[in-house]
Length: 229
Image (cartoon, one colour):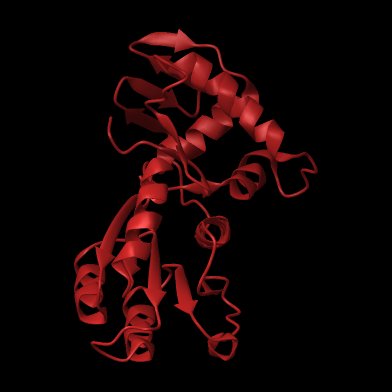
């Protein structure tokens, strides 16, 4: 589940946003002031931070500097009321949204920022020869996967895809990253190639493919192998 921190002066806006995000499978923590928001950001991991620049307990610009310094790599959505407050950010991890805003505009920005953050993650590290996650066991050298001791028949790319995901539990991979990692840099296919492979893979390893236990979808970003196994 994606966790988002919203530091917003208007509680009504926060409640509306929170209800929509939670309906989409995200978790929202809310702080009505910069000081409380900085404390939460320091204590917890967040996949995205939303910061209102109209805070009154301390200058929001100062809070933004502290957040960028402490939460390196965490995407941020900045809410502003004046066009001139928007400062272009070349990293792809910071975006601005003018208030008042529509929920659809907000969600588009959130998804884009999370996707950008996922794409900027470092390339996957070394993969162990044998990976065991709960009832699943993957034997790399022999290219075999067993579930509760029973051998599974997987396609070539299905095996490679599962190997990448199992090797990094909890890490979300954007679709583009998985296509590059599994199908190669020169692959010219489309995302449906990945979704088709994931569908076949889930049909083989999941007790209930419609409610996956192992291979999970990260809202608006990509896919990950569960940390709960």
